[in-house]
Length: 271
Image (cartoon, rainbow, N blue to C red; front, side, top):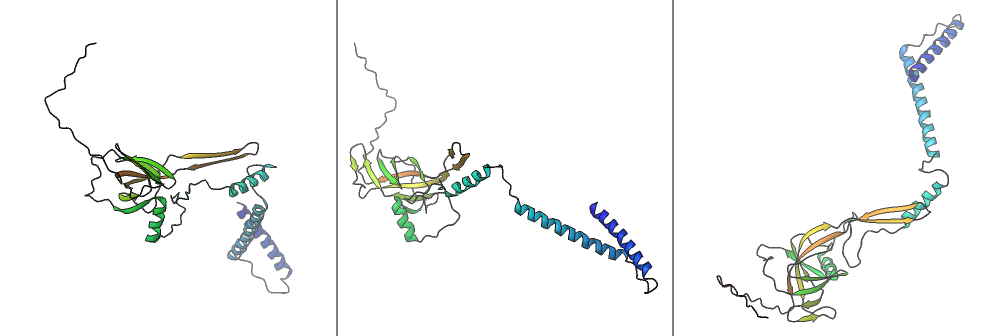
């Protein structure tokens, strides 16, 4: 509507102006042709473009000069200080120095096979290869236990157990790994304690799953400072199935023959 009004007023003024000029110069010069409708439209479009450009320039200047914030007064300085403090704070994502990987940062580093083997050995395991059909995973296990160290954590495991560790690098699902750092071995007949590691002892395991732990909320507050920060974290885990423990004499499992049809008679003792 505003553009249409401007167009009408501009047309009226232009017609009056050209009529006055035509009347004053009629005797001296030949008549000047009146502006056509197309020329009036071009003048109106130029006027509209100039008005819009000026309005946009004013809006840009006003937006640069104004700063919006959720609080007025002295609260703005506190918001800026809180943002600076938040930038200076350390990130609470889990990164283990022992080589256990934390959340992905977006940039993946390419490792050579030697680097993979050395880093896995520093954590406490060795990747053997994928699981084959001939491997008997579910079988009759011997009553043996071991204490192994993976990264900076220790686990007491037996044959057939499942444990959850922090996510291990360079191993996929259904791959066989060997846990090298065995601190203790034990059975029903003997116990071997390492100094600090038992020589020629290892624990074979299979990677079953890569999963995420339950969410942990990290809440920080500074009273009377209007400072609150809430963060969430889910630790990446690897599920391992213990298959075999080597390095100790395993007791023999003696199966008693079952005699069907005979029941053990209860012996009554007279009091």
